[in-house]
Image 1 (tube, helix red, strand yellow):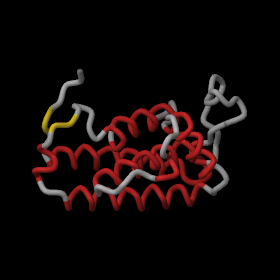
Image 2 (spheres, rainbow, N blue to C red):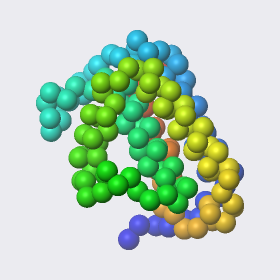
Image 3 (cartoon, rainbow, N blue to C red):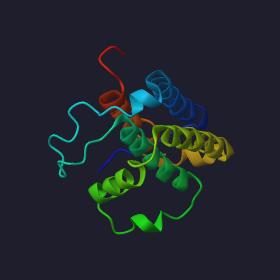
Image 4 (cartoon, one colour):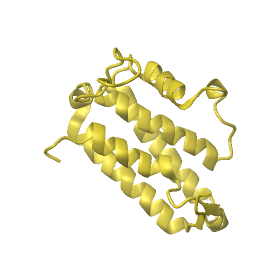
Amino acid sequence: MSKVITHNKRDTIARVEAEYSALDRVVRRLGTQGLEAEVPGFGARSRVKRERWRRKDALAHIVEWKRQQLRALRKEPSDPKLRGMRLHEKNRYFFRRWHPRPAREVVAYHRDVGREIRSAMRALGPEYYAKGFSPQWPNDLVGHSTEHRRKHLETKED
């Protein structure tokens, strides 16, 4: 059984904003050219060997999962296109959706979703944050983003 804790609005928003800022700094430093580069070593052991992610694909993956968390914050229903899909199928769906698009579109999506998340979080009352959540909550906005940022977007020089 997983541990449940309460969070507070100020600290939760601060954690989300800190991760967004860290991710956006990496995105700015890479620029669209750097985002078009392949993620070193990615796909070597993936289920679909020909699925070679570029850094923009990693960014799109992060943002798509943030978008799913945004739906939850807004109490919107889950994306009906994702219903019944397993995790790896959802990830592949996101990859196919964004891979053909240029990096500048992915960057714009990242910034739009970031603004929407911060707005949605500020609009929620403190009682929302006081509900019992896992210690990692909101994972898609913080932990998941941090993991992919470090593993797939930051370079050894960072």
